[in-house]
Amino acid sequence: MNHKDYSDQIEGRNAVLELLESGKDINKILIEKGEKHGSINKIIAKAKEKKIIIVEKEKKQMQEMAQSESYQGVIALVPPFEYCDIDDILKEADNKKEDPFLLILDGIEDPHNLGAIIRTAETAGVHGVIIPKRRAASVNSTVNKVSAGAVQHMKIARVNNINETISKLKEKGIWIYGTDMNTDTYYYNQDMKGPIAIVIGGEGFGISRLVKENCDFLVKIPMKGKITSLNAAVSAGIIIYDVVRQKEN
Image (cartoon, one colour):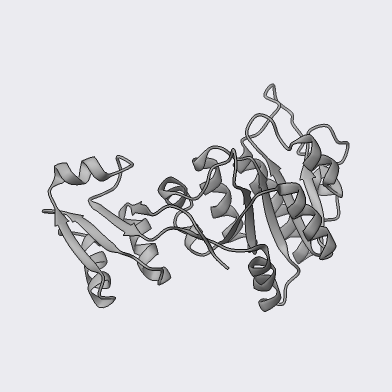
């Protein structure tokens, strides 16, 4: 069962090319008049091959429509992003004959952070990302752009309640690891092999108290400088890649 969110647009040449490669549905592609050079020609050729409608528009119209300044003369209008269910994520791991490797984001509000985390997760072989429906960023064109198109290849589930989801995952034999500054265990000293889900807290507040209590293990990243917290996307990257390292050793 898929849950659809609002329709959206994908902007920029690389993002639109990535979208065309992914085979996802595209309603139409808008191209700025006079932009018939470089990678735009590649986009036009691919769109024609896939019988996708191409509409030329004046620069002023395109600028009014664009959600970012760097749309590079091309905007793809796409159907709503399709979120999946947790079971779809677990099925993905099963199909690959791998232990489930999930990421749970507890209230990431900045779409740039969400996009960066999804990009890292996709490169590291994470099977799926779980985000809450309330008080958190959802997948939009900014997230897609920052993720360098990784959202097209990542299973993302949106849930009503993170704690309920954690309980369900535990029932399925998945260990839950949270990131928290107030624990004694450094991430590199913690065994994170086997079926796991990593919980990354939101910007500023970290993981909520209830979620923290629900985790099987808490790990922290050492802080040496004057600033005592890391950007959520950087924290996620560090932990995700340590899991990759441990799986390979």
